[in-house]
Length: 358
Image 1: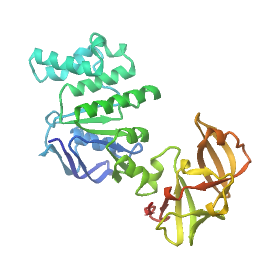
Image 2 (image 1 turned 45 degrees about the horizontal axis):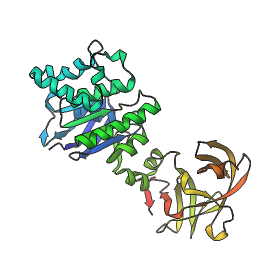
Image 3 (image 1 turned 60 degrees about the vertical axis):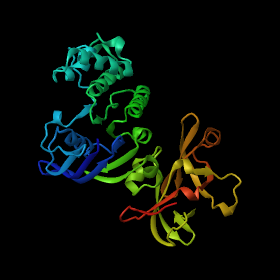
Image 4 (image 1 turned 180 degrees about the horizontal axis):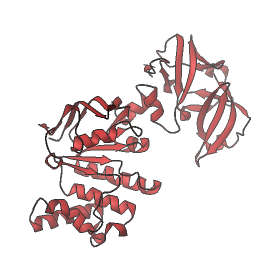
């Protein structure tokens, strides 16, 4: 069993709170992503699970065992760091074998395990190379291999792809996910990158200011965000959040009437959320579709799509539309668009909590 259970974990530095009574249960074999901006406490929580930091309050169990008083090497977890943390004067083979050597395993067992892991990661041809002779992606694979040779209960990843360029990040991201599917080892992965979170995680834990805002599958946090913070942190381009007033069958925003989702309140102020790709040009649309007029400020071609930045009176809105539709729009043009009524999110303007769903 390799569950990780955190109960009421708190941590402060010089009286500044970093974690505030965090409760978390990571299921056996799960790939959980901790997502949040710098300073939200995600790496601190990971280091506490690893035993590299000591919590001020609360308890941790790994594989059913309380580990609060255990040394990091006794917790049976393996951590992969952002900066690789390889031994520069050791070869790839020596880096992979080091943790097994200090455990005084037989040389034949060490060699077998190192070659087994190197075969999975495609590192055999680099056995005699030192880290300085490797690319960033190769170094990260060595760091992953050094964790894998130990066959731990839990893998811990602390923003492992931050130092890689975009293309290599995508490649290594796929390798990590493939490894997890093959090994089924419980994995906790820290990142500030929402794309990594959405593409890799079985569940995503969104953090803010030392607390958990929402835990759910990628679909749950994307399609049903618990609050405005989660909605704006997940998704690119960022969701539109507009201040409006619900009036009967619509939400009035800068004098324009927007449709409402089923089950919406019939009156009161609201924050109206809709993602850019859920807005469509309304050429030829009748009034029954409730089209909205806006004025183009500028456009951003992105290849297959165009991101349109437009003005709605005092407020701004962003649409993501097809290249063919978007290339016809220029700054200053007035156009009309419609909203997919099944993809609208309403939030309370005071608490910023979700107040209606599809």
